[in-house]
Image (cartoon, rainbow, N blue to C red; front, side, top):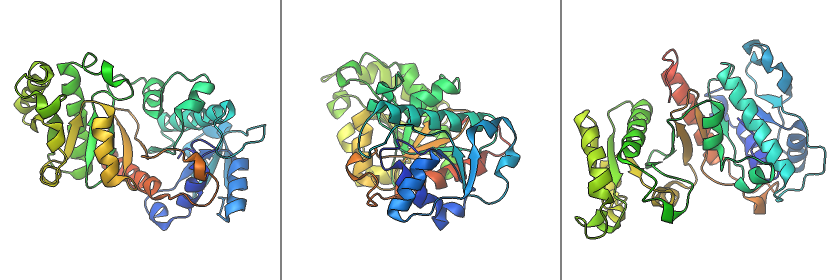
Length: 333
């Protein structure tokens, strides 16, 4: 686990998760973070802070570092200046990035079976000089992964994204038929692993009414339909392009195991309406498992004892499930 932005709710929800029986039942958690921050938050809110502390430099050793049930804190250094909750700063961005790189390093070495990330902000990453917009892109770069995509998952709804963090006006010109095939393939493989059965997948259209046979745009006939035909030829249960305004109606949610969406808000709006509190972010295609909460740093309630850790628990449980399903397989998620 990573602590997330130290000035946000990350420290609080991580400490809550480390004491949650639902977490301790499925894994031996290791939290990459700042011991001083965790102790400060724990003391202020009356939360238990794990006593087993391991310095980051010890990652060059072996998995024997984490013998026992845990939980463990993997100390990633300290913020030298005073940290104020709810403030976006360069120091918070640097610390957030340090926790992430530590978790990735350990997972790539085989010390961890998976990684789970607490929330960060794009603002503090930018202040720290990090060019990627978020976790997904950082994980892809540091693991050398080119074929990856984001999925938001809960038992009630799962959405993946052909494009994600970019302007809406740039979307139509920034994806190809091959991109739709690629993301649909990743979605198929991920849902197959999670649910243990051949998933039924809806591929959404880009335009109103899925283009209305070309009246409102040709992306459906030119880009999306060929991708759907390709996937169906492989024997996958794929349908589309589905009109976006009908794709998340109750009957559609019951029919499909997952939805491939074309841009950020097309998938994230319905997902957050349905599964805001237990949604999990998955980076598909990585050589390591990475899940995350599906919410932000909530600066307005940072260090106040008001934050729910339910999404983090869901992310940990899903990471543990994925780790169990791929043990010995040596495959990407």
